[in-house]
Structure formats: C-alpha cells, structure tokens
Image (cartoon, rainbow over the protein chains, first blue to last red):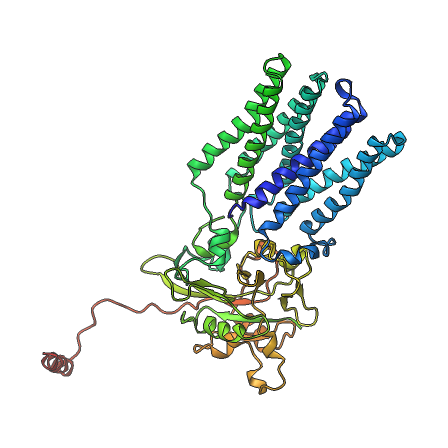
Length: 312
Length: 231
C-alpha cells in the first residue's frame, strides 16, 4: 500500500491525543504523584484535544474531494471509517465538559462522569481507527485483531510519555508515571513483536491461481494491459525491500521502545529530568510514525495478484 | 434480478475492444468523463472500468495464453458498499448493480481498498471514485432497439466472448452457459460472492509439431513445384 503521510500523521497524532486524554483522566482521579494542578490539567487536556483536532484535519488532506467530507458521518451502521468520525465528534463535547468542570470546580460526580465517558469514547475511537484497517479481507497483513490492539497500545504508549513529560514539568512525584509508561510501552512492544512475527508467514491467503480461477496449473503474468501505471499500481503497487523493512523494524524498536525506556530509567535516577522526558516523547512519536509508515508499506493488497504477484 | 456478465476465457482473443467500447460509452455517459492523464505524453494513464490482462497457464510445451478481461463483479456481498462512509456507494436492490453517487463521494479511496478485483479507480480531476456501471444508462433505454439494450463491452466483442443477463433466472442464457461450461467466480475464498462468472479454457487436442509424414509421388512433385515458384 502507498503510505500517505497525512494518514500517518493523523493516526499517530490522534492516537497520542486520545491516549494522553484518557491517562490524564486516570492521573486526575487517582491523584497520581500528588495530582496535577488545575492549570496543568487544563493545559494537558487542550494539548490532547489539539493533537486530535490536528490529526482529524490532516486526515481530510488525503481526500480527493474534501467538500463532501461532512457526509462521512452517514454510514455509521456499516462503515468503521464513519464510526470513527462519529465517535471522535461525540468525544469532543464530553472532553470539553470534563475540562470545564475542572476549571469551574463543578461537583465531583459531573467531573468524574464526563471524564470517564470521554476516556471510554477515546478508547472506542482509537479502536475504530484500527478496525478501519482490520476489517479489510483484501489485505492479509491488516486483517487481524492485532491491528486494533497495536493502534490502542501505541496510542496509549505515546500518551503516557506525554503525560510523564507533564508530570516532570509540573514537578510531581514521577514514580507512578514512570511505572505506568513502562507497563504500557512493554505491552505495546510485545504486541508489535507478535504482529511482526504473525505477518511473516503467509498462512491461508489468495494466490494468483484463485485470483484467476486457473487452478490446475502454474499461472504467470504475460501482460498487464497498460503502458504506464494506473490508479491501482499507484495505490497498491508500493513494495518495500525485505531488508529495508527489517532495518525499519529495528528502528521502530530502538526509537519507539528502547530509547524511551532508557529515558524512563534516566528520569527515575534524576538524570537530565526534563530533557530526558522530552527525548522520550520525541523518540516515542518518531518511532510510532516509522511503525505507521511500515504498517502501510508492508501491506500487500490482493489486487497485486492480477499484476503478477504469485501470493499476497 | 441479478444482472451480470459472463466472460468466456476460451474465446477471448485479448483485442481490448471491450475496454475501448466501455471508455467510449461511459466517457460521455452518466458517470463521465473518464479522465486521461498525459494521453499523448511519456507516461499515459487514465481511468478505465475494464482492463484486459494476459496470463500464461502451465509450462512449455503445455502452455497456453489466457486473455483476461476484468471489470466490476457486482458482488452479492459488496464490501466496497459496506465500508463506504458517505453512502455514495450503493447496490441497487432491484438488479444488483453496484453504483457510486458522484455527488456524495469524498474520494477517500477506502472502497478501492476493500475491492479485491481492482474494479474501482479514482478520477483525479473530479476527485471521485468511478467504476463499471454495467451500462445502466443503456440497458434500460427504451429508445434503443431491444437487442442493443446491453452493455457496450458485450455488444462490441468481436469474438462473442462476453454475455450479459440475469443470474437469478435459472433458464437465462447466462445461467445455462455457466452451468454447462462449469463457470467459476474469481477469488471465491474472500466470500464476496461476485456475480460475474468466467468460463474456463477448453481442453483441446494437441496439434502435432513433428516432421510431417511423407506423401506419395504427387506430393513430391507439388513440393518441387512450390520450391521452384518460391525461387
């Protein structure tokens, strides 16, 4: 699949935003590390909303006809893309009610209820983002429950690193934030490792024989019937060398998980403090972006069978 | 009604006439234009609803070239319609034709990801997805003579490799042909239940290619004469 940068930015940014918002709510409820001040909660909440809104806006850049984007809320009943949009839009007012009840010292039940509902919707929205890809039977590398699991784990991992930076800047006790981040990042790393292992073997997948129905003998492509590329080759023809993909997987694990993990240790040992937390956030987000790029680059659509691939 | 096509892989000669006729009709039809990018340039490309590829089956000396036209299969379980967030893609309940409402499409490409057959192509000039309409603006046109109320690709095919008809009617020509010739659908394991069916290449007796057996005296004289004439 052709990796579109607007979609990569959207999924990484909105995932981190939704993750940050949910974890911010948890940190607020349990007053982790002494609890954030009112101002810090508001700033954190708006950073999360900013990431989500920028992400959603950037996702409209890959539309060829954005003037009809408002119609995307129409098919909630069947389409995960539509569901994602609807959930993200329902999330917004709840998140704003939560932030407003912090600002205006509203009763705890209102603050906790709206925060809880917003956190649940954040989870559902990121799940829907993953399901957009996981529901496609045409792409073996995507058609697995590991995809929404990865989207959730990585979104929450990025969010936890942002929250840790907030805790360091606010001068809170960082221990609970380090523990939370370490746990979520370990889960994300393990899920990603299982995913890479899983897509390594083809399993039961369509072949050029079932694609053409000529199942009694070997089949090979003689002529694609077009002189230059088509929409299909531009959108689905993208291929990444196995070696390059392997190298990028190392980058994902080093930048996305190992380096932020090391920075957690530094923050724990009071080395570098703020700087270490910033490095952790940047490395985590860059790692997640490389992971997302690879997620698209490694996906092989079955239409490639008609363009000569023996198996997808 | 479940309208669709039957493509006879035994007969198709790979002349691309169906693709040309399709482009001719639909470029000026309800879904047109079908934009071309750099039609006379170095990298010609464009929107087509019908593409013909050629494959080689088996290996020498048992190999055979199979020409393979493909357009929208008008699937029973059309995932392209399920995933469409705007409601632009729809399947007509009355005849099963899958269409795209050009006024609603936002060009997100999601339907093309869901289609295993590569039937949907984005028109970069209009920013909307386009696909085979089964010539819906032709097959119901009362102004045309009855025999011309068929998709352009079917009408034009010089080898009669394409048939159009109703698969819900077990006695229609398409249903009968598929039954008798063991028609099959493409990538059935994805469970999209494509309507269009393909007829397999027939097994034909092998044509001997060894040296011809010697003829009699008459044959020798004939060959001698032929040689003289050629010189």
